[in-house]
Length: 239
Length: 315
Image (cartoon, rainbow over all chains, first blue to last red; front, side):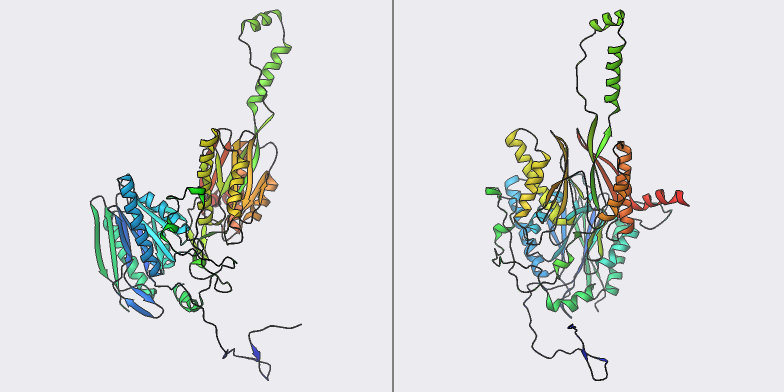
């Protein structure tokens, strides 16, 4: 019986370290990971979309001022993280589709409609996906805050809060506890007001910057209310 | 998670083993799915050329999957006690025949003669609500039952985007059928439409295991359709990683004479037990009941609450 093993056995019967010194095949990858974290929270009459502004690749930082929130309409902001090339193209396509809708229907797209449209745009590339994690934050038709989170191929659902991107696995549990009151016994479920939500987002990103190499430099917060979209920039760790 | 993707990013591979190595590219028209995609309903997908052997990485690895899932549906026999009472009433009127009653009967309007079958079937559909991306739980509140129209339901297992996209397309096709034929589509036809749609993409990596449940002229309908091309009719199905646990519970509790309440409780218990033992299932249990008037949402309960409900009495 032939045993295939990645290890060579030396003279004394112990395994030698595996060092492959022959030719190695390198394949071209159309994707690269540019890092970044995005977060969105929906309140009673507001929505917050926040992202860090670091653009990295491998061990380098390409830019410290590349925010990942993009304004779509007066009531909707999208946060895209993942592969920057696909983020740019996707936002261009969404902008074009928004314009087309506005011209044919004489009104702006609602947040829910944008979310449904984005799902089909993403699924159109089911076999060569856009490597983008999207989160849409905005106001729905009734003026309430709405957050829609996506996966790279278009599966989506409406949430109250969602974190996406490189530090999402660190942030999501924190949000589950602080906004969703999960795993807490006997606490009063207070609704989130705007000031507390903004402070929570800042705290949460400071934590993410501590422990995720791809998150840092600065934090861009977009607050969507019926008055419009307000932007705020907060510095983060630059290391 | 971030560090591991750096180390693996040298060799990003594509899990796409296909002979069709043509690429539609990224023309603007490609992305306009639904906008002017009407002609022939041909869906154009951009396909990347296969560049080598597979190893799920990059976005492929991080796509949300509902592999971790338990969905189940079964036809149940609802006790139609009203039918029995009717039978008894007409029977007693026939046997207790006195002259007075005869007169009374003659003066009454004619009792319509209705054949009420002994049993009326319905379909109970129960699902969990967890979506995973690798070992990360992407969401605990996914709606895995898709309401195609007021009398047809579809469940989701496999790829989240695949299921929701194709079932949404199925809803559109069902509506077109209704407009063209001026009658509702049957469950058999709806499931056939879905099966034929995904069969065209067989081998290309779609992952979908769904149950089409509904009520039509022939009574309750339950079909299992998946991306491999299977389409089977049946009385009971459980789909997903937790399906084996659910089968155990349902098979042991299923009887001919279940009432609606008992059948719902059986479905709920089966999903709960599956979430208890399967790591990839969890969240909430969503229950639907399909009957002759259409479907009704029976309940949505968190598994943690069910746990206390079922485990407390044992202590």
